[in-house]
Image: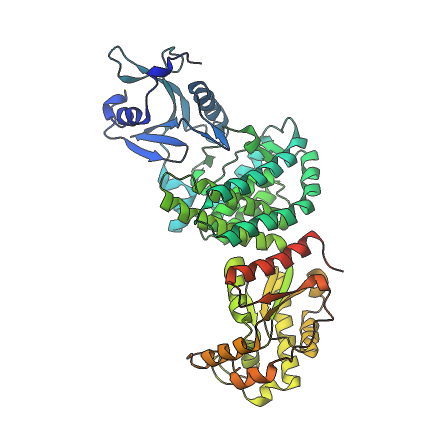
Length: 527
C-alpha cells in the first residue's frame, strides 16, 4: 500500500486533465474518451481502457482512502478474471515525476498517488443491451449466456457463512428503501415509495424460510453481484465484466438473486421473451433459480436497487428519470411476485372502476378483461356499438360473466393473473363469474376491489361520459340513476379478499388501497 503524502494526491480536475491527454499514455493512443459512472471514471485509450475509482464514501461503498482504492483495484482484477479473463490485464500506479506531473507507473511504485485497473477496451457493439436493442441476439445466444452463468454459479466459491446471507439481504432491503426515500425528492412519488416499503414488509416473512433452505443447500455463492445486460459480452466464449468488488456481501448471495439482476435488466430493455429464454437455459444447464414468486421478488428488489443508484447520478435530471423508470419496473415485478390471483374491479356504473383497472394494468402489466366488450362480442357488436335491452337481461348477463370467468381462467393459466373490469353488482353475476373460473379459483384467490363515490359524483361522471365520442360503456345518466344503491353486498366473499376504494381520491392512493389488499393476501391468505 502507498504511503504517499496526502498533499501529493491529485484533485479530480488535475487527474481528469492529465488522463484525458493522449500523451499521458505510453502506448500513444490517437484519442482518449472519458466514460463516467457515479463511482468511477473510465478512460478509453484506443484498444486499452483504464478505470479509476472516485474518492467517495457512500452508504453502500467506501473508496475514501488511497489504500482502500488500491485494495479495491486488486479485488476488481482478481474477481473479474473469473468471468472476463480476456479483458482484465493488471493494476497500474499513477505517480508524480520529477517535475511534479502525473505519470503512469508499475503497481508497486512506492510513490503512487492513485491507482488504475488496466483493461482491454470493451467491444461495446457486442454487449447484450446493444444487441437486444438492435435485435441481433437470438435464442441460441441467450442459451449460451444462461449456460455460462449456470456453470459460473456451480463453480463459484460457496459463501464462508451462508447463514449470514438472509440477514444480510434483509439489511440490504432496508438500507435500499431508506436511502431511496432519503434521496428521492420529487423523482419518485410518495405513494410509490410507501408501496415498495409495504410490499417488502408483507412479502419478506413468506420467503425467509425458502431463502434459508436454499442457503443450507449451498446455493449462496460468491457470484457477480451486478449482472446487468451492458456487462454481458456476447462473444465466443461469453464473458461478463465489472462485478462488484467493494462489498463481498453484495456478491456472496443466493444464485437466484444474482441471476435476477440480469432477468430484471433484460425486461427493462423490453425483451421479456428473452428473459424467459435465459431462465429456461439456466435451468436446463443445472442452475437452481427458485420458483417464479421468489425470482419476481428478487427482480423487484434489483430494480429498486437500480432506482436508488440512479439517484446518485452526477446529472440529477437524468438520474431522476432513470430512478422513476426503475422504480416503476420494481412495482411491476412486485405485482408478479403476488401472483396468482384474479382481481375484480367492480362497482356501479361511473364508479371509476374502468379508470382504476386501466391504472392497475399499466403498473402491473396484467391484462384487463372487461364486461362491456365481452358482452358486445357475445352479442356480435363492435365495442362502440350500443347494445339493446335484451343484452342486459339476467340470462345474457350470466352468460357474459361466465365468459369473463373463463377468460380469466385462461389468463391465470398463462400470465398467472388477470384484472376483471365489471360492475359485478349482482350476486348472480358473481356466481356466474366463479362458474366460468371453475377449478382455477382453487389455485388462485378471487379478490374484489369495490369502487365507490357519492351519488352526485356518479351522475356527473355519467353526464360527462355521454359527451365523449367512441365510448364503450352503454351506461348513460339514466342507467347510473337506476343503479344507485343497487350493489348487492359482497357477503359471499371472505372479508380479507375485498376492499373498498374511494375513487374521489388521487389515482396513486387508490392503487395503494388495492396493493394493500394483495399484500394482505400474500402475507396470510384468507380462509
